[in-house]
Length: 323
Image (cartoon, rainbow, N blue to C red; front, side, top):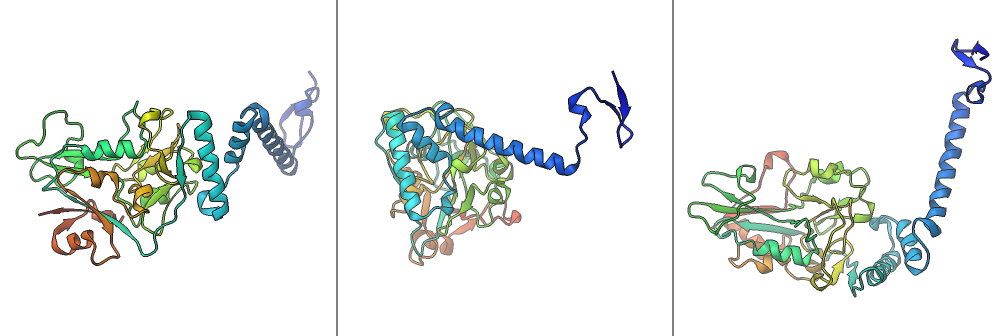
C-alpha cells in the first residue's frame, strides 16, 4: 500500500480512489447539491409508477403528494383538493363522502363553557364525538376526556380519567377536557411545519397532510388536547360520518396528529358541536363570543367562571363554571 501525507498532514492511500482526490468545501457542496437533485428526481420518478402505482388512484395520489398547505391554496385549489379526496374515498373505501372547505363565518369567534355542577360523567359526549369525528375504533381514540374529581380538586391532573363504574358517584364531580383552542396556543408555536394554526373564528386546526408526526404539539399542550395516530385509523364504513370538512373530520392517516376542532364541519354551518348536542344534562355551552346575546356570553357575565392553568397565559377559549 502506497501511503503518503496530504496537505493537512493526514495519511492517505493514493491507490484508493476515494482517498486519492482531495475535496475542498466547494467540491463537497457541489456533490451535495447534485445528490439532492438526483434524490428528488428519483422520488418524483418513484411517485409516477413505482411507489404510488399506476392508474386513476395513482394520478390522484401524485396530485395529493404535491399539493400546497391549505392556507396557501386558492379557492379553486381547495375545491379541486376536496373533489380529489372524495374520489379517493370512493376508490379506496367505497365511501360516498362530501368534504367541505367552508370558510369561517364572518363575525364569529367561538368559545366553550363547561358546567361542573351539572355533568354526571355519563360520557354521552364522548360517544357522540367519536362517531361525528370518525375516530379510530381499534385504539378507542377520544378527543374528550372526562375526569372524576373529589371535592376540593381544581385540576384534572389529580382526577381519575379512567373510571369504570356506575355514575354519578356521591360526593364527586366531573370535569371534561379537550382542545381549548387557546388564543396563544403552545401547540402552534411548537409545530415545525406550520401544520397547525388558528383560524379567524378562533378554531385551532391541523392540515393533516402537512403534519410530520413529530409530536412536539403533544409535549407543548398542557390540556391533554392532542392525539397521535400510531396505526392506520379504522372506522367501519357503515359507521362513518360522510359529511366532512377538510380541516375537521375527514379520515386521517397513521403518523398524523388530530384533535377537537369544535366540530368545524358543524359549527361553520351554525350547528352545535356533537358533544354539546348529545349532553343529557345541559352541562356544555357553545357559542359566539362576539354575540352579546349568545348563551356563552350570558354564562361569562352571570356565572362564576374559571379557566385551567391561567398562569400559563395561553388564554384558552374554554371556561368552567358552576350554577
